[in-house]
Every structure is written in C-alpha cells, then in structure tokens.
Length: 280
Length: 278
Image (cartoon, rainbow over all chains, first blue to last red; front, side):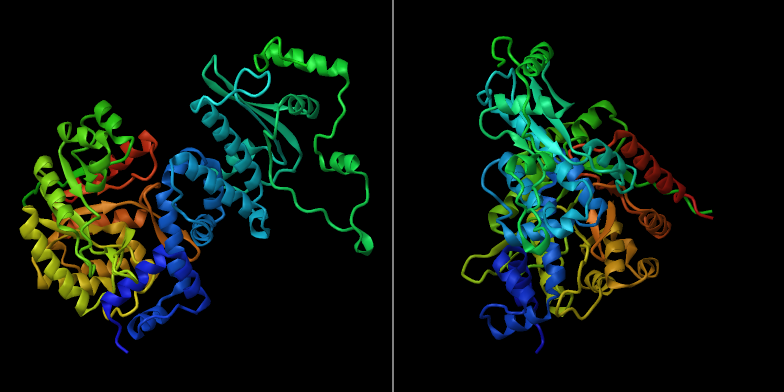
C-alpha cells in the first residue's frame, strides 16, 4: 500500500503528542486506525519517534538548565538525557499546568525516580547532585514565595544527606570525566541568608545535622532515595534494632548531649542561621 | 581573480542573553534573527527591533503540513514583517500541526520533517505560492534535521530540495548543522551532497551545535557548531553568496560571551576569506 503523506503526518504528530498512542506504537499494537493510518503506523520507527518526543520534551524544558545544570550535565555526559526525557514524556504529562516551579517539581521528581533505578544508579553521583540542586531550588522558591520560616531559623533551610560530594561530581563532569571518588556520607545545610541576600551551602557534621533536624518541624531533609534493605542469609530480613540499622545506614538517629547541643546552637546563632532566642 | 563580493552579514539567533550583549557590544553582529513566536510574548525581543537590524524566523506556518496555518496567524506574521522591515521570512520545510483523530488538529509545538515524496512537494509548492502572496516578503525554507526516515519518502532530502527549487522560486535557508545531522542519520556524505544542492538559491545559512545520543545525531543550540559544519560553510561560500549567516546558540538563557565572540569572529573570517577567489 502506498503511504499517504498527509495521513503519515497525522500518525507522526499523534505519536509526538499522545503518549498513550506512542506507547501503543512501541508495543506494536496501535489502536484501531484507518487502513492508511495503520499502514503508516506500521512503517514508523516507533523507538526513534519516541526518542524524538523525548527530544522535543527536553527542548521544551531548556529553562530548567538554570535550576538543574549539574543534573542535566550528568545525564548528558552519560548519554541519557534524551532517554530520560523520553520516559518523562511517556510516563507523565510533560506539560504540567502552572509556572516554572511546577515544571521543576515535576521533572525533579521524575529524575529522582530514575536515579533510584538500576540504570540511574550507574550514573555515579546523579542522586546526590539532583538532591543538592533540588534543595537549592526549594530554598530559593521559599524565599521568592515569602514562605513562613520554619522554627527558629532566620531564613528558609533544607538539609541533605548525600553520599558523594556534589561539587566534585559536577567538576569531574565539567572536565569530561566520570567521577571515580569514594562514596562517603556527608551532610549539607542549605540556608537562605536573607540579610546578605545569598543562598549558603555549608557542609555540616552528623551532630549538627541532628540538632538542626530536631529544630526543623516536618520533613525538610532531602537525600537520594534509599535502596530497600537486602535480606540477609536464609532470606531473613535484617532483624537488628531500628536505631542500630539507622546508625549503620548513616541516618541521623543520633543522641547529642545537652551540652553539645547547646554548643552547636550557639555556633548556629553566631553564624546567623538561628535566631538568638530560638535555639533549644 | 574574481571581483570581490560583499561578505555575508553575520548575526545571532535571539536568546535571553542577546539584548544585553548587543547593548554592550553594538558592533559584534550585523543582525539578530528573532522568532515570530518570541515577538508575540517577549517585550525584550520586541525592543530589539529598534536597536539592530532584525530578520524574522518562523515556526508557525506549517508549510509541509496538511492543515494550513490559520488566517489570523498569517495576518499576524505579515504584521510583524512590516514592523521589522525584515528582508525575508525564514520558515521551516516541516509541519507543526496535523489532522487529529477527532475533528481538532493536533499541534505538535515543534517542527517535524515531512515525508519526502511527490505529494509533499506539491503541497509545499502550493503553500509557498500562497504564502509569498500573503506575506509580502520573500520566503525562505529551512531544511529540517531528519532523525529517522519518514515513512513513505521516495526521495532523500538533497533530492527533495533540488526538486523544490525546480518547482518553485522559493529561496533556501540552508541550515548546515541540520544538513550534517540528516547526513549522519541517513548515512550520506554531506560534502558530496552539498555539491549537488542548488546553492545559488541560498539566502541565509544557519549554524548550531550537534550532539550524539542513543545512536542518533541531534540538534543542539546549547553548544557550538562542530568543525564539519564550518567546513560545509566554507564550501557553501565558495560557490554561493548568501546574504546572511546566523549562529543559533539560543537555547540556554546564558552563553559564555567569550565563546560567542570567538564564534562570530570565526564565521567572519570564513566569510571574508571567500570574497576573493583565484
């Protein structure tokens, strides 16, 4: 059957706009179509069409480069950027209603899900760089929206537990290299110094992180998604007490003495992070 | 030795960083190419019309599509042409809308390369004749990047461009990066294919970056054009005299200024170097 050019353009356009149709093409099971459209659909390279849809989605999100340069750079360096945007197109509405913040929120959620997959974990540092950039974006959003400031802090705050130094990862990517350092858990504080009009990113230790978490209401801590615990021998789940499991995993299940806490609070007050009267 | 001819004007495609760059370096480029779609929504883009010569670029007329652009859109494009005093409109040899499964047309929101066959050739030729009369300025058609073989195609892109130039008097906006991408994805030699193009019909040239991913060459306006694109430019200018060369480094909101300046200088060197031929 000779293909009709007009019908072919209709099939291509639908494959680039309607993700349900695209998924059906990828499965080799297009919905009920006219004979001419069916012939065009059968002749389309569905895999390449889906990648093109990912490319278009990526181009539509070029404004995100400003907020997620490290994350996008990493994906690009590993040759995964268009594939990840293809999956975003296929899995989610790629045009969330609302402003840029809604777009960033939707895309970072998708990137975080990807970072937790087996393929995503092959990109060393991806989850850490993404968490790092997301925390900075969240703090900037909170400042821009004049969100109420949590607890005794002088500006919006986030803390993140990262397995790799995001600056080292991004620097390696900028050099065209893959980061090959050792993973080591570190804590980072993202704080909007509203007096100076700056966002400060400060590496902190576990004790400081524990104190800050105790002060922060709700969940303001971020970090890469945790892998589910592996079963031990004989298929039994890990039976260690929760606190010990958490400590082994590097979580902040830490007891800080009152004296030590007071010293940390004093340092945070001196640094301007906490209000003088608000420390514990 | 041949007579010298005027070197092509060198310009940049509009991006968020361009207005400030042009204000601080008013002699860096000869023109800024501004998309019609940006003129509708961006007051900074509109302010450029009073600061530097501008050329219109457009991605709304769906020249290779079955669904013609709405009359209101054509009228709006015509209005902006007059305000800009643009020497031409650069549109795409592509479609942006197509018939949908129900009565409403589907809007892709991006230019898509059409099937390259006699039916598309006839449709494009008719669209050119219609638009040239409606718009009041010359129309140039830009070769799109091809990321896959469009089903139903009976010609490759160079052949289609030759046929188009025989069938109509439309001018060409030769995007050398798109040409390079198409050659890589379709598997032909771009330098050989360039020789067979009707280069005398080229009025404007585009250059942008190219990136490989998932086994496909992709357009990338966030990086500089590859060396092969500049070699294609030199060969084009050896045979033709386009009026303008435009660098499309316009996806990011910011682009390193020293890089932009160096790239403009590179294009000028190539353009001036081709003015004299033994």
